[in-house]
Amino acid sequence: MKLQRKSRRIRSIEELWAIEDEFPAVCGPSPSSYAARHGLKLSKSYLEHLRRQRANGNGTVVSRRRKPALA
Amino acid sequence: MALYRRTGATVTSLTELRDSIWRDPKSELAMIFVARATWPSPTPILGFAYFRRSWCHHLIVDFLSVHPRVIDGKPERIRGVGTGILYQLVGLAEEIEIPCIWGEATALSAPFYERALDVKQILDHFFIKEDVLRYCRSELHKSREQMLAHRTTK
Image (cartoon, rainbow over all chains, first blue to last red; front, side):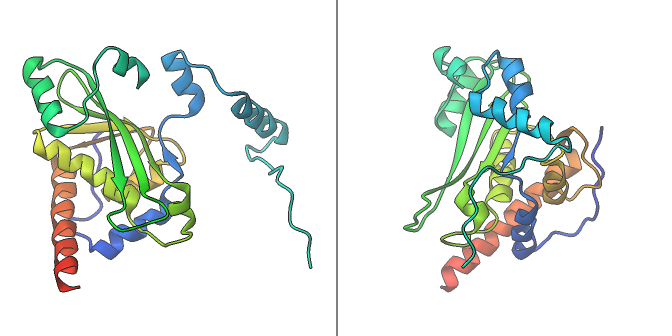
C-alpha cells in the first residue's frame, strides 16, 4: 500500500517534538508474534500479563500494584 | 539479534556496514542504533532501534523504543527521541542509498508513524519510500539545521 502524504509543508522542530506524545513505549511487533516468528519462548510474567488481560475481558489490564494510602 | 551475532551478520559502524555490503551485496545484516544524551544525564541512553539491512538493500525496522524515563518526562523532559531515531534511519538510508525502509505497525504504533511520516493512514505495515522518504529527508535536514543554529546561538 502506497502511503498518502497529508501535506507538503516541512514542519518545525517544535512540531516534530510534539509527535512524541503519540509514541508508544515500543514500536515493534507484538511479543507473541515475534516469539513465534523467531522460535523464542515468552516469559512467565508476560504470559501472566496475557492471562490477566483475557480474564479482564476488555483487553485492558488492571494493575496489581498497591495504591498509596490516602492521607 | 543473538542469531545474527552468532552468524557474524551484525555490524557496529557505518564503515563496517559499507564493507560488509561491498564484500557481499546480498548480505542480510542486523544492527542497533543507540540514541545517547550528549549532556551529563541520569538517562544516558535515550532510546534505540533494532533494524536490519535486507538482501535487496532495504531497511527493516524491527524495534524502536524510547527509555521509560524519557516517556515519563522524569527527571528531565526530553522531546523528540522516537521521531529522532526514525529520522536517523532515514539519514542512514540516504547515506548508503537505500530506497525503502519498511516495518510492521501495531494498533499502538500506527498513530505515531502516521504523525511522524505525516501520512493519511497506516495499517499494519509502512513503507517509507519515494516521496515519503524525500519528505522525511527534507525534515531531517531542516531539523539538523535548526539544531545547529540552536547550538551556535547558545
